[in-house]
Length: 124
Image (cartoon, rainbow, N blue to C red; front, side):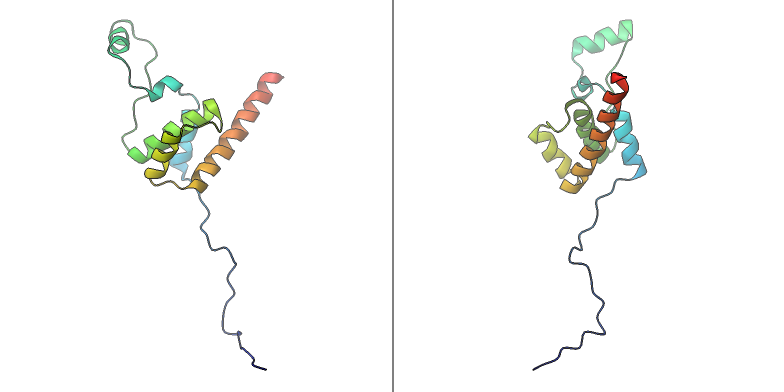
């Protein structure tokens, strides 16, 4: 019978996958997205821009300069308004910008908690 000496090896956990995290700036983008309307995802029409010039009013949020943060903002706005019902093309754009499935799950879980807390507050 053979004996294998493993005393010199450190045992690693079976799962060595990195845990998905968002930075403080990214969480701030998610929080700001809560107040954005779905219309902020669309480019304003010529008529809407004309009216905004003469009458002021609520303008859509400008696009973020960082394309990765803009993809995060877009998916967060949709999550705040629609929950888990996200368009496939937005999920694809989110992944294409460098975020993983774990990032999306983390974001959706946090937004879901926030939506539940808001609904509980309105029910009182």
